Image 1 (cartoon, one colour):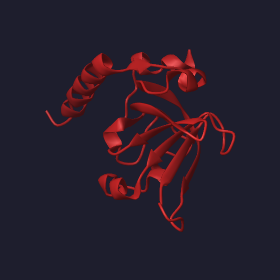
Image 2 (cartoon, rainbow, N blue to C red; image 1 turned 90 degrees about the vertical axis):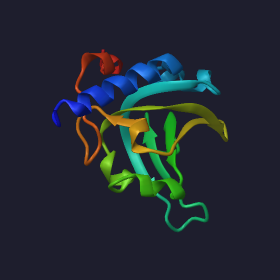
Image 3 (cartoon, helix red, strand yellow; image 1 turned 30 degrees about the vertical axis):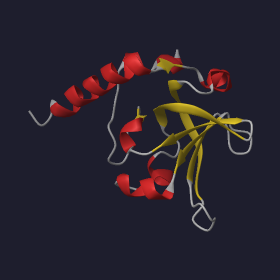
Image 4 (tube, rainbow, N blue to C red; image 1 turned 90 degrees about the horizontal axis):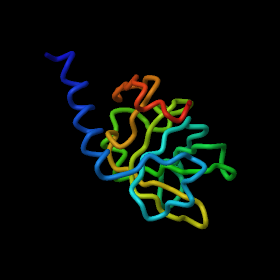
Length: 140
């Protein structure tokens, strides 16, 4: 039962999320500001700004900052929800992130508060591993 439970949980998560958001390509992120979406791509750069006033963790998709197409933001109060450092866990991984697209200084970003909002497609430290064609649509 322990081996099946993660798949059941992931299936329920995607079913519920599938009703609330739309899959959007990374290139179309800026066109969908204000919508709750799922975007899948590779995390191309990460950074924990521990010495800045706001101390965010930034995960970039579609290039390295400042030329990235999307930033996933994890605020310092939400880092405690992650079992490992997000900047290490997701670096170089193919992920799907679900959340509301916001505009930050002309660039799209999604603020996440829990690891369940970022699903790792090719494995990750302590995070759900999903290997299904349904969520590899971005590679097709």
